[in-house]
Length: 355
Image 1 (cartoon, rainbow, N blue to C red):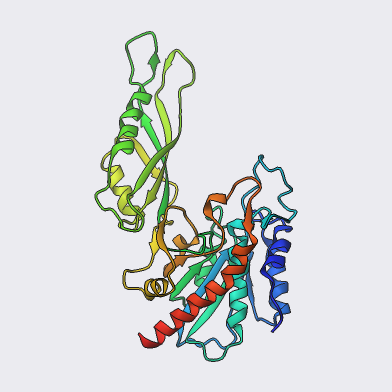
Image 2 (image 1 turned 90 degrees about the vertical axis):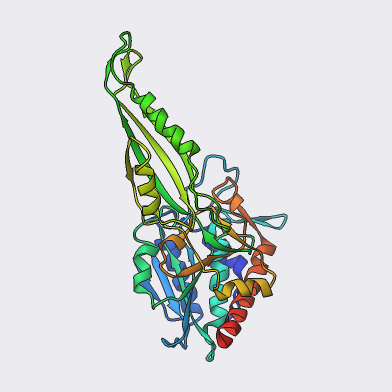
């Protein structure tokens, strides 16, 4: 087998500009690795995927997925975001932590199993686009084109713990309506005051269903805009609400509850990014227990939300470093990841054979 060095592969990946919707060069680099390791692959837009050599459609199929794209580097960078540098055991560079480390180590894991003939499961590896913007040409486009998937491991920085549930997301555009008038007169209906009533509801309402893994539904007003000048009572007040939905509700259920409790106009930009995770009886929970891997519920969003199968999130790195200036991942995190992924898949295979 041709050696695979995740550190060197990640260095090369960091050096390739791969912002959302601009993943073509990174996809081509992944193609070169597939060719080097004699792996058959398929390209769909800026996504690239492959299945194990001895794929058997009668077997349980596991998807290994992470994303090619990065956010734009922020203004706080003191290092060149596209020049990988190793200092004091840290590999610096844009996308090193989110989620290049997970991407290259999942790829190394896939290569490890690729040629094995008698696996108790199938493996599909997918490097997808547009994750950072929840775009329609990434996993949402790709998933229906993959073989039927039973379970997915999504590579994101989790300190190699297993996120067995993940909150969904809705962004709501809200508009409170008043009636304009001269501010010197006691006339009109102030839309800001109307908005305050509903904003107060968003800040205090508690959804009754709480999840053991992902906690409560969280609603946060993040933007507000109203008024044109100091002496006019505003007729409209627009505000935006970020809603993080636990696994006890669908996005549409939460949206209906909100609309029944507020007076403002409420329009969801999308309801497709639902909560995700695994059932309480899924074998991955037993795998985590046997391997002494911590499990938790994640408040952050990933491409899990676009997958109709059960899934977990797991990878090297720490989400607290994601999207930060001078982003980095520890070298030893990369070195630990492939053996940990292999152990999880091997144990899961054993559980599948006896289940």
